[in-house]
Image (cartoon, rainbow, N blue to C red; front, top):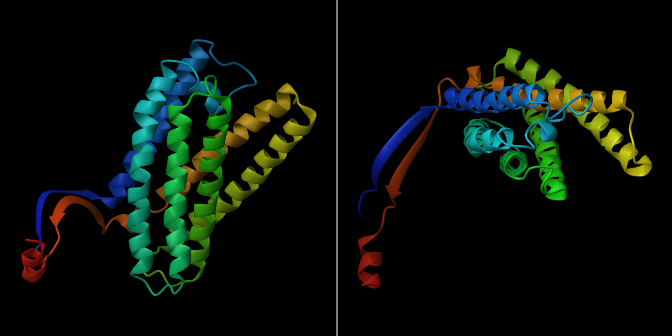
Length: 242
């Protein structure tokens, strides 16, 4: 049997992946809101993220910064998946669904950044709903995994941050869903309610970020490695192929 060979190894601290992802996301929000408000591209009460990244250059910056952040998100999910898989947690299906949910959440965030609201409203709203719903699902599932008490790498303080942050996130998602249903039926909302809706959306996004930031202390002994691997092959299989 031939040995497996690797090339171009690149290792990144798992905690640094979270910091990079959060930094890219927050930078997107800060630039988009600052520029859009300064240039009067958005105004009271429409302080939604979708409005802030709707026009250039904010939409370009969103694609430039937010999309890479969403690409890194599944890598963070993979580290967390490994932690749970290597523990005594006895429900692998939940762990698998959390990983799938993380990937779907990342795709939703990428869609939001890539498709401006003003150009394609329905696809943008679809991806926004995907990002919000799967982001909340992953947070809730993580809390259930935490509550099992079987994840040896967990830190109690971090668990508490995830728990209370997820409670807030679930409540905010229900609020956004209720306001969305009200708008669908009645077709209009007052300026005060629209402004409140925008604040709820912004808070929810930062709640998702906080869930991942809570994992930084638990990720410090882990690294995510990128490398090219040549799989082991039996000499007989090679001969048969020839």
